[in-house]
Image (tube, rainbow, N blue to C red):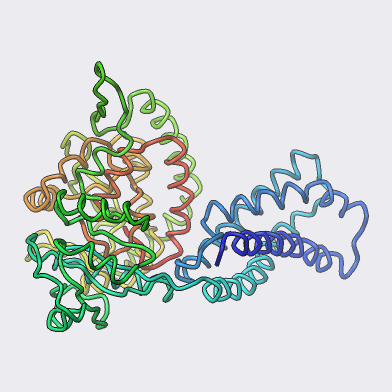
Length: 477
């Protein structure tokens, strides 16, 4: 899809979105007044519809629903639910602001459900249409033997076939690969298991060569884009990126921890020497007071609003199994400080008595029936608002982990220690961007990127995105 067609496609998308949002209100008025539209009541809607339309488009954009071909439909649908919910909240606020007391509250209750149906039908068709209009992008994937196929699988599997991996360039065990054979494809390497036990799907891609002959692979295949794994050495990354820049081929680099540390580094000059200033990995002090005020305000409001749900959940836990309703567990927060994290108990009492610390899995047999429901809707996390009030945690930050696993992860990934430069949180960038089974290394990258690029606006965005995550079963916790 060229730039002109893309512009008109998204213009049409936004126009139909606006029409359907407003159609939801009109239909609700007809239902409310049995087919009539009293002038006294409808006038309030006429006064607010431009603002309702604008906020709807902004919410759709915020939840990344323009250009959503590479998202799964479940993620698109979860975003639509959030859009109609918050749009109704904005609508009620606007009607109060404009003194539109003749705007029936029952319309605000009915409209989101009608809008969700209309938008879902339209967006499902548009989602397929967008994928059909886009030209398939030929991708070359570069990386080490251990992760290159996993990256290739993700690119094809989660973009609905828009990305087509035409081949792999593999640096085996960090060393140079053999020279590209005369026929352009290493048939033997193409059939070997490149990813060990962590295979996304059974498809096999041809291995075109190694880093030492990457330029020849690039010239022979002329891909639309090149994806570079973060596991390559700095020397190999430089060689790949230089070749892509020289040929004007877009390159996408999966960052490693070094590259995350230099993200948003400040440029200064010493005499005639340009230098990057890489500061401490942490949240600037001027933001900490504001962050704490927001934590206290939202956590207090959250406890009040969620109290009925919390009490009902506690009763269900008590009726199903013996043991404490509130579960305390040692966790580590900023500076390596240990605190007790509060959760509703979702496992049988004494679940780790005979095994020691064990990470929970998606199909863990220790989880009770009530616990499965609580975990699915994240209700078990509500008591952590008390931790936020106490100052043990923040609303947004890296998820706190147990000391046993922290020590284990630091031995495996030394950069994990930087995660404790900021206060732990109930939700974070890793939770809204990752999935339940995202690797600890990738979750760590998201946590460090959050710290490195922190702003109050990012916290607010993560909180709003968390609501969408609650509607998706496979997102990270």
